[in-house]
Structures are given as C-alpha cells and as structure tokens.
Amino acid sequence: MAILNSDAFKKMFTFKQLLRTWIEIRNALKAVEVRDCLDYIEYQIETRERLWDLRQRILSGEYEPIAPSRYENAKTGGSYRVITIPALDDLIVYRLISDQIYSRARINESPSAYYSRRHGLTPIGQKVDRVDSEDYQKFFPVWRRYNQYRSKTLLHGLYDVLVITDISNYFDSIQHSLLFEYLMPLGLPREAIGLLGRLLLALRPQSGFSPTPQMGLPVDEYDCSRQIAHVFLFEHDQRVIAEVGGDNYVRWMDDQNIGVSGNTRARQVIHLLTSSLAEQRLTLNTGKTKVLSPAEIAVHFHLAANDLLDKVDADIKGKQKTRQELVVDLETAWIGALANGNRGNWDKILKRVYGLAAILHSPLMAQRSYDDLVSFPTLANRIFEYYVARKAYVGLADLFERYVKQGECIHESVALAFFETILSSDPPPNARRRLRDLSKTVLDKTWPPNLGSYPKSSAALCLYWLGDKRSASVFRRLIQNQGKDLPEGVVRALVASAAALDPDKINDTLVAAVRVGKPDVASLATTISRLRGGSIAEIQGSKILNPRYSWTQQRNVYDARMWLRMEVLAFAESPQVIAKVKKEIARLKKEPLSGTESRCLRRLVERMKKVP
View (cartoon, rainbow, N blue to C red):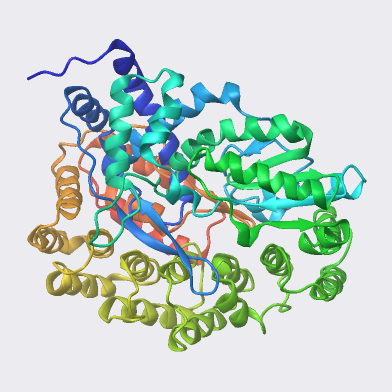
C-alpha cells in the first residue's frame, strides 16, 4: 500500500537536498577519525542511482535504519566515550534532518552559544593557532578564542569570579519524547519527526542486554547529534540569559561559563542552572562546577603560557628568527608552562607544545611522550604526528610497541590513531619493514587484545601503503582463512589492497571476496567487476582525489585511501573513466610527491601503459 506523504516532507527530501547532504558528508570524510577504506567509492560512482533509491525508500515508507557500528574513543584515566558510526544511508538521512532542525531553530540561537566543530567560525577574537590549520574541525582554535574572551573579560574587571560547569552525561540524558516536544514548534513535517524517532531508536546509546530506554543521542563525527543537542538547549539559554544577561553567559555545547559579581552571586547562578536544566530532565555536573577568581583563571586557562606560545607561533610565521633561536624560545615557554603542569586545561597546552615542537623538528617532547600518551590518550594523534614530523619512525614504532606491551592500549582510538598517522607518512626502508611487521601482527593475531575492528582496517591499509606485490598474497590468505570472522571494513580493505597490488590475480581476489558472504564486501567486489566489465560508464563528480593539507609536511598530501581509490578505478574498461584516471595521473606528475606517493604513481603509470 502506498504511503501518502505531505508536500512538505517530499520537499524536505528532494534529490537536490539529498545530494547536497551527501556532498557535505563526502567533503568531511578526510577529517573524521573512522573512514571506509575507499571513502564509499560505490556512492561516488553511482551517486544518482543510490540517492534516488534512498529517496524512493524514504517516501514509500520502506526505508528502515540499521544497527550502527561503534568504537571507543579514549578520554583520560581509562574512561572513554562511544562514537557511533551509522550506515551511510542512515548518516545522510540523519544529517539532512539535523540540518533542517538547526536551520529552522537558529533564529532563536543565543549569540554566545556555540556547538560545532564545523560551524564554529564565528570568531571571538582572531584565529591564533596555526598548528591546527590543516583541519578546522578540531576543537582547539575555537577553544582558544572562546577562553580568550571569557578569561580576558574577567581579568579586565567586568566580573569578580567566573562560574564554569557542564551537564552530566548530556547526550545520554536527552529523552526522546521531550526532545520531540521541543522540536514541534519548528514546523517540521510530521513524517520527518517520525523518521527521526526511528533513527534515534536504531542509533541511541546501548545498555547491554537490558531494555534500552527511549533516550540518548548517539555521538557521531558529522555534527548530526551536536546540532540537535545544541537546539535542545535554546530554551535553557534564554532562561539563564534572562537572569544573568547575554554578555555574561557563554556556552560551548554543554560547557557553560558565567561571569558574576562574587561568590554569593555565583551560588545563586549555580542554583539557577540546576533548576533550569531540571526543567528538561538534565543534571548539572557538580563535579566539574568551579568558581574561579582572576588568579585561578589565569592558572586554569594557562594564560601566561599561551601568551608565550603565541609569540613563538608568531615568530615562526614571521620567518625572521633562525630555527635554533625558535627552539630556544619554545624551550623557555615550555619551562614557564611547567610551573602549572597538570592543572586546568593542561592537555591543551601539551597539544600546542607538541605541535610547535613538530614544526621546529625539536626533540623537546620525546622523552615524556610515553607518559603523556598514557595520561592523555586524547593526544594520541598529536603525539604520533610529532614523531612523523621529525621523521623519527623507529621511535614512533618503539613508542607504540611499548604502549601495547605495558597493557596501556585499552582504547581502540589510540591504535587507530597510530595506523592512520602512517597512512600519509613516508618512512625510510628500515622503518617500513618495522611498520609492516606491526601491521601484520595486528592482522594475524589478537594483538593488542580487544583491539576492535577499525584499527585492523587501518593496519591493512598500512600494509598496502608500505608494501608491494608480495603483500597481496598475505591479503588473499587472510581473506580466505579469516574473512568470515573479520569485520566487513577490514575485509573490504584487504580486498581493495590485494586487487591494487596484484591486478594480475584480480579474479582470485574477487572469488575469495564473494565467498566471505558479507554484503559490503560483496558490494565492493561487484563494483570492481562492473568496472572491469565496462558497465560503469562514468564517475559522477569532477574529482577523484581530494587531498588534505598536512601540517607535519607543510603541503597537500594524498593519503593511502586516495591512491587506493585510483588503483581500483584503474580496473575500468570505460574510456570515460580511464580518461579521468589519466587526467588525475597527469596532474599528480606535477605535484611534489613523497617517495611513498611516487611509488603508487609509478604503479598506476605502469597499469595505464597496458590500457588500449
């Protein structure tokens, strides 16, 4: 029986809207922590067909969200947050709905409320840290501007103290029924609210074998839940601002900061926050609620250290000082920062110092890097990148092996960060062997224990990136012997890598892939077969490659996934597809490529010589 949908619902899910959402997601792929081995190449090849099919299923009522995958993202002290990875169709639908919610609600947004890594471009002050310039999605630049504002207004005498606090388990605590009540005034189509409800039931945080209550938003990497959670606090913002004034209140997601006239007023404001949040069945995090004096805020936000680091950063950009002079300045700033070590936002200072030391190729942080990795696993990316920037690849391998052997690798996000760092690096021959052996160990054995699937997928890509034709036999053996037990993402990486490194045995690889019996693996095998058979006549979209700027290498880089996409597309029989591949090859020949990138390019050039 056909489902009769409102015109508003049909207009919300037009092909144009779905395409715009897919493009936003595709552009964000290179910046997220968890990625498909080919960045959903099937969707790029058949964008129109897949989006039309998705739209038809949505409008007919046949669309049904599926259970997502999840992984543990390290916090400190052994704790972690669970990151949810929706299936791509579900991600597109969820993102489109959340964009609509924010677009309709933002008229009621407080000017001092912020939420997004992507949309946090409305600045307080200036962008002050070039270290994160490769990826504005990182928290740090906005954090710096945000804290400059709230700290300097306090120190200028506008307030006597600053209240800082957040909400206990905010995303997990949002009740769906209350959320839908808050969304109703936005005028969303009734069907869209129902669709959001089904998505949240599939994606919400899990509770083991117990019944899962209808509450909680998933933590995703594409700002879907952040937009919704941000909008949910608009009424809370209005209640607080009505009492304290808009100039005295700043909120970053659930992190709230209020400047007040003294300790008595601070207690009154904390009471206000508690009662306001209770109206939405939320709880103030008393453990993180602090009342800071000007002297305490200078320590908490490391104002003096940040000023010194700002100067080092400015001098690096000014290019007037020698590297040796800059290294001495950084060491001086670091000694000053250590006076307030492990206090307040110390992890942000560490991140800055590791970044500046990386740019200057300074060994300043090498001796303490293991202890910092243990204490602050959230800094894993920055610490590993620090080693890559200094080309200390053997030291990088030593660091990770020690971390694993000491039993500290309890978070899959740290292992994932290690292998992902390798995927855009250029190790020398002796380090290549060491890193290949580490990748094989992770794939062959349960090492580290409870590693999870995503680091294994990245380890497989490392073998492709650092290996050659001989690695293809390792991949095929793993597919044949362990394919049914390995996660789909890992098998996809093995199949694509084996195909790229040993195209002469592509039939053996595809047969092994089909026998695994996993839908996403079969989808990849089918796509490669269709490319070879010529039934895929063109690639939709103008670009195959989408480089990202690497602050460690100070240039645009083409990581392993981008080269793997090119090598898979090189199987095509279609003249139009081959023409696009050749056009990209011609462009790449003019780029300043690393040794590893050049090896991939030579492999592609040899493949193209065999094309009629």
